[in-house]
Structure formats: C-alpha cells, structure tokens
Length: 349
Image (cartoon, rainbow, N blue to C red; front, side):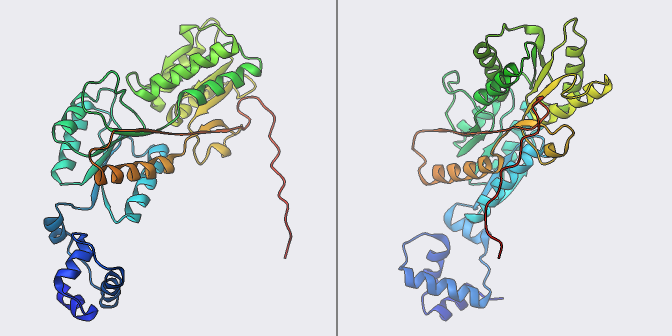
C-alpha cells in the first residue's frame, strides 16, 4: 500500500507539501498541487481519514437527521444530500428521529459525538430540546423542510432550507373553486409542524381568494401519515354535508385519503375531486392521474449541503432561510380533462 512518503517521492515534493494538499492547511501552487494529485492517482494512494481529522479537526462528514426515511419525499431529499455531499468530498451519517422530540435530541447528540462537521436536521413538532442542544454546543446546522420561526424563538438562529408551502396550497384551492367546488376540505398534517401551519395558511388564503367561507369542520388532521389521513377522511365523508373536493397536505396522507374513498365506494373525480401536496413517482400511474404540487426534493437536499458548507466556511455570517419554488402538476384527479402532451418538433436523422 502506497504511503504519503511514496507520493512525495513520486511528485518530487516534501511529505509536508503532500500533507498541505490533502488537508488544505497551507496554500500550494497549482502545478505542485496537480503533481501531488497525479502521484496519488498513479500510486493508488488512499488518504487516512482518521489521521487527517486529527490534523484538521474536521472529519469531512455530515450528520443527517430526518424522520420517515421510507417516505418518497424524504428519500429524494436524502438522494440530493448524498449526491451533494459526495461531490464536495463529504461522507454522510444518517439517523431517524421518528418525529419524537426526546428521541430527536438523543440521535442528534449521537451524531455530534461522532464528530460530524455539521448537521442537517428536519425538526419535530416540538424542537425546543433540539435547538437548545445545537445552540449550546455551537453545532453548525441547517434546518431542513420544517422551519423554526426566529421571531418567536429566542434560541440561536439557524440556516434553513425548505419549499414554499402556503402559495401552492392556495393555488390548489382556487383551482378547485374555479371548477365550481364550494365545499373544499383539507387533510392537514401533524399539528405543530411548520409545514402543517403553512399549508393551512395557504388553504385559508385560497378560500379567501375564491370568495368562500371557512368552515372549521372541513379541516381535519391526518398527522402526516396514511393511517391518520384515512381516519380523518372518513370523518369528513360522514358529515351531513360532506366536501365535494379534497386537498391532502402530503403524499402519505394522499394514500390514506384514497383508501377511505375506496372504502366508501367513491370515485375520483366523479364523486369527489382530489388534489395533493407532494408529487411522487407513481402519481402519474393512478387512475385518475393525480393533480399535485411537486416539491424540488433533490434540490432541497443539495441546497442544504451547500448552505451548510457555506456556514462551515463563514461561521459568523447571519443565518438565512432559503425557500425553493414548487411546481403545479396538472393532471385529472381534480376533474379536469386530460391535458394534451406538448408537441415536439425536430428532425429525424
């Protein structure tokens, strides 16, 4: 196995220069740096990451704490995080907080004890212990998807990366209202999550824009899970005046709502229209095809890594919140006819 001394001899430089190239501990002339990299490649030299961490006080690793990794949305975020981390030479340690505040604090502490350089965390509905721990230990952190309002939290502020939530839900509501629906229900997520409150705000904004009166009986909570949404949708369908249209606030709850509708023998969109927040790979395969809001999941993950690396490079800069735009994917579950595919012009060779 090649050693650092072997690389130094092959590149015609000192061992100290090889160390500076590997660890970034001192500027090295571009042609010298390239000679070292070429020698490493030729000899098949693999740096000792443990030794490097002792020199730089960095492990080049990132801790990622997100719940429901089996959820397609978080799976795509994970793919974005992993790709961006790898691109910048970082490894990833992953933990699932299970949306439980106490467990959340424990897994974050375990990641911290593994000496990760920074963390990306999707906080629970009650992140007070999490925020206190990260602030007390000054852990470079990016909050992902679910944000903490800095105006109401006296704890240290953190960089945050998420998608727009309110405006896209308002667009779903106004779209359904334009189709003639007057009783539009919302299956909302777990109370306390910022995504839940923001999507509820969007629902209310959509009703106002459409000139519809808010009816509290048409808002139910599915706790961000399929089983909870199935029960919540069943409750909506049991109302004396049930809704004619339904907006579900995440992909898992869309599945639960569809189960409840099937149990009642109701067809979409003939008996009830359906629009959902979160697009997913097989939404286009349902019959009818699901009208949805698509979040830029992989971009959110990649952006979180870039923001964290910026924080590591500039620890004292002000915290920022980055919101990425969503896309309205118009299909047929809302009751609209099938949209024609755009024609493609080109030449055949």
